[in-house]
Amino acid sequence: MTPMSASAITAARWAGVSPWIVSTAWNAAFTFSGPLLFWLAIGVMFILL
View 1 (spheres, rainbow, N blue to C red):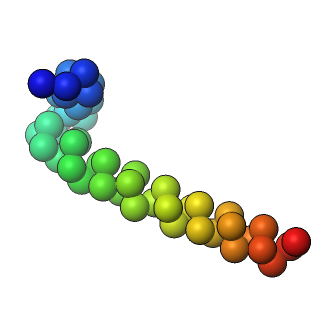
View 2 (view 1 turned 30 degrees about the vertical axis):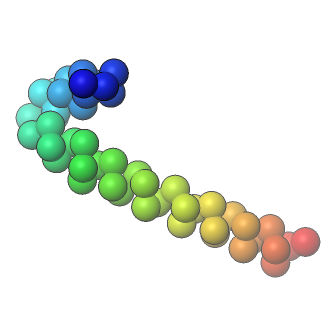
């Protein structure tokens, strides 16, 4: 058990989906969009500076 499991279960209950969907699909989208936005910001800074 982790402290985050309770929040995933609660979010799943509010959204009406499975906790598995919340903890894998939603977090996967967040995990993959973070580095993409970081690389984009670095690229823009490289072009401007």
